[in-house]
Image 1 (tube, rainbow, N blue to C red):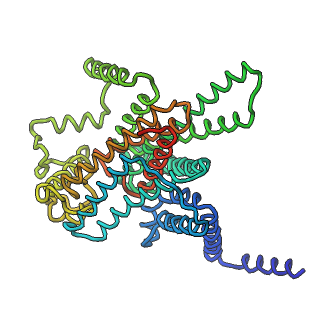
Image 2 (tube, rainbow, N blue to C red; image 1 turned 90 degrees about the vertical axis):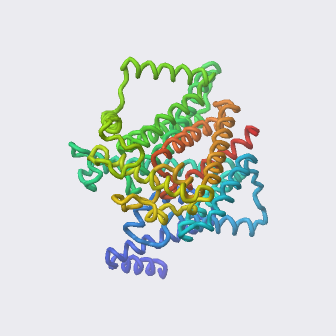
Image 3 (cartoon, helix red, strand yellow; image 1 turned 180 degrees about the vertical axis):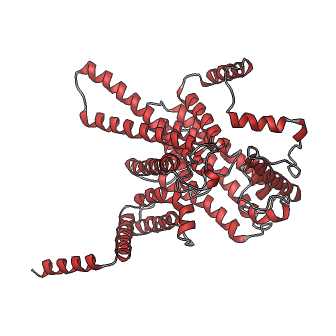
Length: 484
């Protein structure tokens, strides 16, 4: 009776609380349960960090807290892993792929060395911490002794992608209002931006997730088909396994379609170009004799353009016509550019490219400091363009300006190594093997990242945690397939 009375009293107290206090109580209870779950199973912390990570820009605008939820969950996760290792005295044996480890260490050393020319220590430290977190997440994912726990991380990636895509499509097609600068000219539609607060990084996140979801759908389809044929011959069927494969096929295909639709709704031209390149990479990873297919496709595309069978998008064609007009030709020097609504975004990008080139001329070897493009921008900007925008809108120029020629070469060497190892892991093992098929999808994500970085910077909004998780999957696949 005492327990019943206590429960009734607690219920009455909760019912009498104001709505705001009730929401705070519910949030506190949810936070306590989340912390308990993370310490019980740290892999859940990695999953939650991937889900909450993209909310960082929205939280910065609305809550204005010094630490976003994704970073907070990641810190708790690292503490939970450390606590588990100390209690059990069983430390994971993690063997990262040697070539990637050497290239990563070399790039990180260059970034640390750029401390000396840096103008802003906080920006330098923030950027360095991102790459340390990439390494930490990769090692934690690869070091899981139970491969089934990696499915928790993979499931979190699909949940984050689907949630962001759905939210972005609501913004673009359903809500009917939004920031004026995101409204598509001549329509009532808006560009999708999710919780990223900007369409371009949102489109980049969609571009990094749809290849993996699409590859999971293709792998599940192949598995269902092969097992169906075998079961017909044997007149038997493993119902549980078949149901799981069909569920994976349905969910991953839905997420891939949702992400592609959201990517298009973002209106990000860099994301569209990156998605096309990622699709080509997926195709080459799955087919036999990929280089023959690549050469034939390239020749066919050239012929199609030559005979006017396919056309460039209208907006891109108008931009190219403007910049090819002799009366407006000014090269990369955009100080005297005539800005129109059609060319504004392109001229703005070129202005930031020109500022990055000025930084490179001033400090060609060590740069202006890792993460210090925005801090150095006022000293190198063009007069009409006062807003630094945080980066050069071309990450290769950005990393060149921040870390110099040494940093650019180290960065290119790192990603060349990562892409080469991922390609080998995807091609060496049969694509009927899950790890090899997953590496094919990650190869598509790497391709999108490399191409999209010609126009933007995607190491924002905790997207680097996703990159770390992908790298962990590659390490695990390398250990399974024996890739060197």
